[in-house]
Length: 76
Image 1 (cartoon, rainbow, N blue to C red):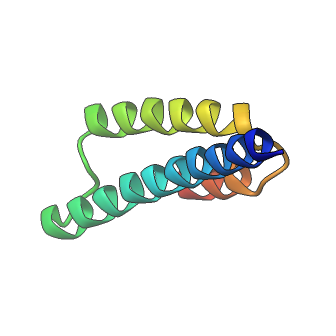
Image 2: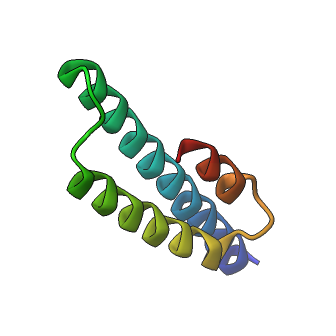
């Protein structure tokens, strides 16, 4: 039983870390836009999109049917 609890806890932590990572990417983009008074460079936006996709794939391995993918779609 303890092994399953630990597995569930680790899955929760991995999902939560993916959520935090994607939100920090968005904060970085927003801050960049404010400081530059223009959108971030296209190269950064492309890299951020790839990072979001990777975080989403990792999170999806451990937690399905969450609002994370839907929420990230609103960031674009």
